[in-house]
Image (spheres, rainbow, N blue to C red):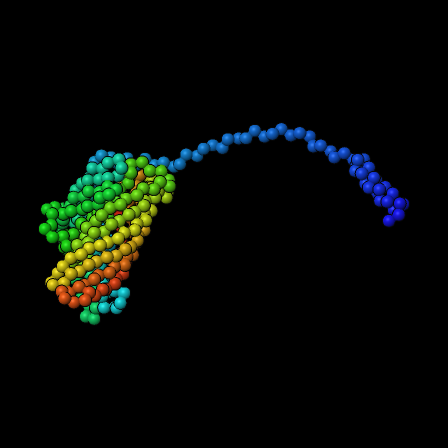
Length: 297
């Protein structure tokens, strides 16, 4: 590079610097006032106060249950059972939704179809059965009056279970999105074996309007039981899930209708005396419908 070249390069840098200095000034936008933030109104959650009352008079529902029980290993043990009844309850109710009261099951009918090779159809009826109920977040107990000496596989015990479906625990004050939990133990029978059913359910308020409150209920349950009959021991275990849609009338909180579907897997272990145990695995599907009936005049 010659001395002239260096001077030329220095001249170019100098011109660029000068050009930058003499560039037209950047216009400054006029100051604008800072907007004052506007507070958004707080929307309170929709609240429905259910005036449940201390004492609830006689209320009647039609309750229908349809059960399909089938063996997973063969088609021989396929059974369908349909039961229906008119259930009435009158009870005292606490603010947490717990209740204690009396009621009846009327016109309880059971139709069982056994889809074996020959096929058998049975039809049973209980015209009227007095009951008592205790229900809260940890207890769900419906008993006959007078109590049965042996509840296992008795038609009266099945009628009491049918009536239990119309007793729904609901807090006195609910709001949209509210969830409450119940964890109960119920005693019943399967294949002649006393069984305890451990149930956990979560009930959610999903809609509130001027006339009704709508709920969904998600349930998981386990069942366990053991017994002995005719020189053999039996054990029943199982798990299942269920989902229900529930509608309550406002403002009194009366159950208007309920529909529920559940599925469970059961294992029955049969151990004859002195012989190896045998297992039978079954699947059970249950649909339940409850509908409020007009008050008797």
